[in-house]
Length: 213
Image (cartoon, rainbow, N blue to C red; front, side, top):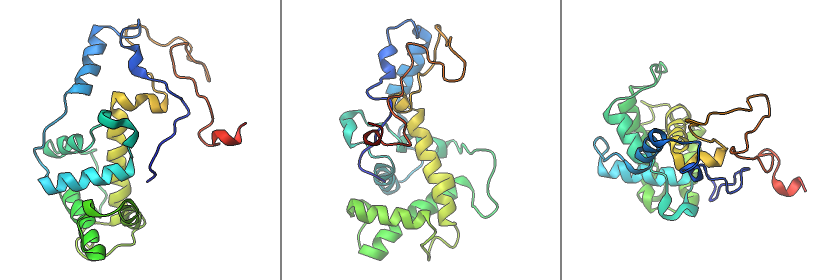
């Protein structure tokens, strides 16, 4: 829950491949639809949507993106309206839709209980403290008796938010993903091999660049 994100791939932008031999018109059409077609709200209530927008802004800050923010909540809503689950459920967890309803209500209740304010009205540090306590299972009361907070945070909330974010073409470059390679394909498939059109790792993400010299 930081305010900025650093990537070891510098300013690599996979969308710069748009007119390159890596992508044909079929590939461009698939990527174009993913960039431009954002689902409308159909499942979440307006208040739930707003709360989740605030939560996503703390989990994956996008202040540096300006108007190019990756939409996350619309795709959560799409998963819920289609009841798109992963095919299994922990025995102590309610069904997917119920879990999201309870989880969002629990986040909102923590803001009201601790600060007498909606989660969206809190400062960043207050929001982070609530989310960390949910992550660590340090919350109680309604509705957490029906929903294990730590499991909701890790197995549903965080996993879904991160998955949606990095499934978006605008975020591929941050992890060095070159996207679909059709029709060009990939040539250097050996361990450590890198084609000239792939991202180059500038520094080890485990070792901050200032420590590598």
